[in-house]
Image (cartoon, rainbow, N blue to C red; front, side, top):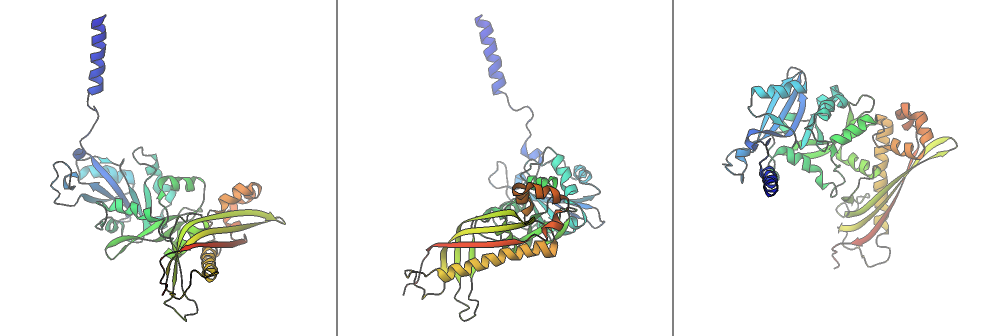
Length: 382
C-alpha cells in the first residue's frame, strides 16, 4: 500500500515539474506585431509584416541591442493567405500573429475593396485577436510602418497607442478594433476608422475614414474638427478642451480655454404626427483652464455667463455640422442614429431599415446643449 502511494505521488511530481512540451524559443518564432495592407505596383495585394527582432531589443538575454528591434517585410500576391505562405521563402521563422497590435489599411485599398472582404480572412484565423486596433491612411502603408517611433520600441505599438489619449482631446477617437469592424459589418451599418499620417517624420492622428454600409468601401474623410462633432453626438467625449475666440476680432488674442471634466449625450427619437424626429441633448461640465482676458473677475456673480453661452453655441455648431455632413453630403448614418431608432421606435425602424439611409437624410434632428462652468484655474488677479 505504501509503495503504491509513493509511486502515485512520484508520478504527480514528474507531471507537475515537467517543462512545456510544446514551447518555442522566442528567437525561433516570427512574432508579428503589425500588418499593413495596400496595393502593390502590379495591382496585386501588398502586405507588410512587422517582425520583432529579439536580438536587437535591449535588456533581453543575449541581446546586443545594436540594430532596429523590428524588421518590415513587404510582399505582394493575389491573396493574403498566399502572401503569408510566401513569407516562408524569405524567413526561416514561421509567422505568429498572436501578439499583433495594429492593422493599417491604405486609402486606395478601401476605395477598391470591401472592408467586409478585407477582414474576413483575419477574423477566421485563430491567431488573430479581435482586440487588434485598425487604422487607415492616405500614406504609403509600407512607409508609415517604417517611421521610427518616438515613444515605443515598435511602430505598430506606437500606432495602437495613439488613441490612448482620447480623454485629453476632442480630436482623438477611441480605438476601432477588429471586433468593432465585425459588429458593424454584421449589422450592416456605416462606421468610421481613425486615420493616421506622417507629420514631420512622426506618426500622428489626423481624422477618420467613413465606411459606407452600402458596399463597405471608403465614402469619404473627416478632418480633425469634424471628429469633434462626431464625438459629441456619439457620446464618446471623455475629456479634452473647448477653445473660445473673440468672434468680433476686437481682442483676437483674448481667448478662453475650457477643460471638459464630464459629458453626456442623450439621443431621443420620437414619433410626431406619424413622422420621426430626433432630439439630441448634450450636457457637459467644464472648468476654466486658461483665460487671456486678465480683467475678468471670477469672484463677481455671473462672471461665466458669456463663457457658458459661447461654449454652448460652439458645441452646438460643431454637432450640427457633422449632422449636416452625414445627412446632406454623404447621406450615410455613420452617427449611429439608427441604433437609437431601433431601440426607441422599433416599429418605425423595422419598416424603414432596408432604406434607412434614404430615411435618415430626411429626419429632422434638433440639438440642445447645456454647459456648466463649475470652476476656474489659475487667474491673473492683478
